[in-house]
Image (cartoon, one colour):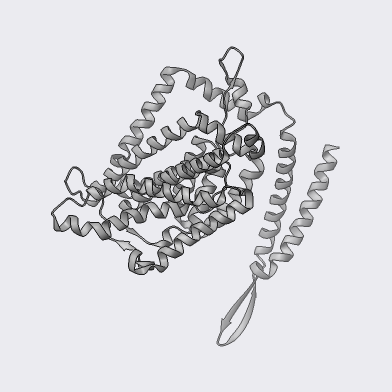
Length: 430
């Protein structure tokens, strides 16, 4: 019976290859060359077997993968490779010496990274860490609260433009008074977080009764409204030209060279990443975090249990916006230039993709997804024109075969004795 099913799948794969060849024949086999005002059609017959064989192989293995994925849930979780790997890793990490040594090596590598690699790699890592902060912030909204926000880049823009406005309108007073303009960064960092929080609360007010697609559309509109306001308010924001020459932070009154400033910003963003992880981790196990998870699972049941949905949604949007605001300040300090094109819908989608690929609601997943989506395109620049295609394929594969993400969140399951059951935690969902 199994051989018969494989034979049927081979026949279907052959049919798909023929159909795929017919569809792609005009695009890949026929090439039009215009010479001397005349159009000549060139047939590249050597591509025909490549297309046919590729379509046949991909179609067959795709069907087999879907069949494996359908029957994967029938297996005992303790028999799966994923469970065995996670149990091994968790067993090693329970050893305090191994855990401390791993953290020490990782911390040493992160601390020495600017000295081990050049300025280019340091700037790339700064950008990756900025997106880690953004992913962790959006993870509060999407992962914990279950609120789909497609306008998250708007809060990112609010943070960056807060620093830009301080430089544009208050910076000249600092220069005329002989005050170190590098202090503007430290003024902008908390100010941008608070202002972005206010914008997050303002956004949450009209969407308190919305959910699902309607919430996504409203947040998308909010992000585009903020971007268009920044682009069309030229006298205040600089319009499409943006704001340039934004100062980098100084080190206790000492102006730094570009390389030294990059190293300094690197350590600042590393501290902010650890601060964000600490706050998000504390939120997860707090009463607010559990209320957010209950709201994500079922708003009606959550409200019936006496949880204030209005208050929780306000908290969710406010916290997510705060971290986007401080990330925007770091971006403005790193690039010294901002304009509305840096905060498009694509940025919001990128951050959301990092969470989905890494694992919704998971701190390691948000970190891994952000690092993956920012570092791979940078170090594989020859494939830059295929970035959208690669992202789309990756999203499809993750959603179908690893719907909980590459590094999913596993909550601890407690026994009656109050001790965590690690085996149960590996089998737990998000």
